[in-house]
Length: 115
Length: 118
Image 1 (cartoon, chains in turn red, green):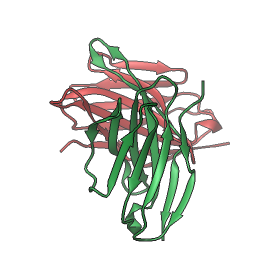
Image 2 (cartoon, chains in turn brown, blue):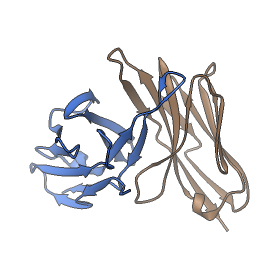
Image 3 (cartoon, helix red, strand yellow):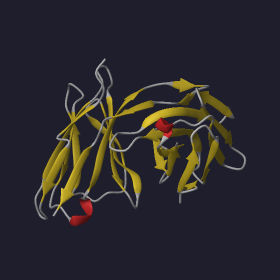
């Protein structure tokens, strides 16, 4: 069964500190992995997307890494800001036989940045 | 460029009723996907439409259905509502992309419709 597990479930950090969120998956055959940021009351917004051949991708203060061998990804946030408070969702896509993608979502990590 | 819009934003229904939600994708996007988001289950894929055809479907009962019109707007219908259908329903429009031959379609999400079933 394709699964995506994220840890921790929730995290509280001080403004200005760094943090790392984890995503482990069993999705196969792997196509791509995305990280989304979802603010409360809003739809998710794409942060990064990585394919099998990419092991790191940055978007400003967000850096995602991918280890396709161990099926792990991380999202590192540097110099956190209050506006980083949100849920971060890991999404892994598998290629199905129809040529389209089967998408599996993690349940998300809820990050709270406090002053 | 306007983003993905969903209507209504909030909806309250009672068990047994049916509901229709609407999604207007970003201009030029032909792919529309629907998701259900609940606190316990997270985001779950419902279905995807492309050029008026359903091309992908998640594991939801037949009470959940959808369609896409020629202008790419999409509707989702839920019949015989149950209490467990209370959720945030998100629509996303897709912009195709590839990287190294691998599909990397970017999805842009709307704000969602918050459905409460009483």
